[in-house]
Length: 248
Image (cartoon, rainbow, N blue to C red; front, side, top):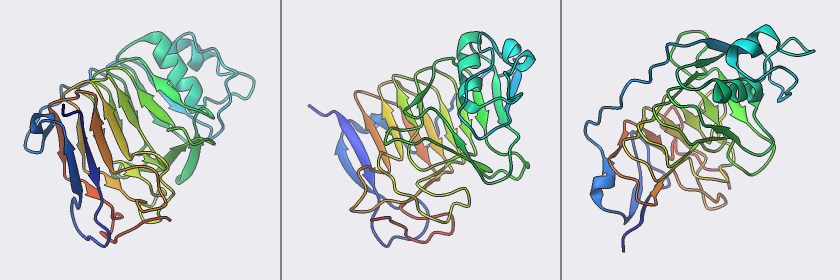
């Protein structure tokens, strides 16, 4: 019984979307043409991450409460922002105001986004490229999305993210397996993108580098019956310049 599809980089490939497909799922699971991801109705409150630390000392019962009471440090961490968004519910936005190129720490293990229709955008200067990297200090992926209709844009991650039984999410303009510049490979000890269950997700215009024999993950893995996903316009196994990258 077919169950999963993995996309692996071909070593030495340059250019757009270089991959080798190991097929174990009906082709309906991946739509490379046009798939419309419903707009996430992010019309709520914007919470701005203002520290690279992973401290939680603010009031995270809601986004409004966190903004009013960010804790003794007076700053909002990514962990606090996600916790407050999860407590508030769908329709909020997470942005960043930290030094350009910062490594923003998530939970030491994994941070879960359970509130749907949330936008997380790491482009601080409006040029359409990632300005921050979301990382953690363990081998786990920094961010797992378990809700529907979210948008994750313009963020670098050394590994991850993962979608777990989540549908209609948009992952766009990500640098995975590289630093914030999109050029220097980082060790990818997990899949670049993991889609497990759910349907109608889109991964577009992203760089998934850092692949190689010493790394445990693949570029994109779609498994557990996930269907009608779109993989479009990505660079897999190369950096932003199209140079083949791997980290043994």
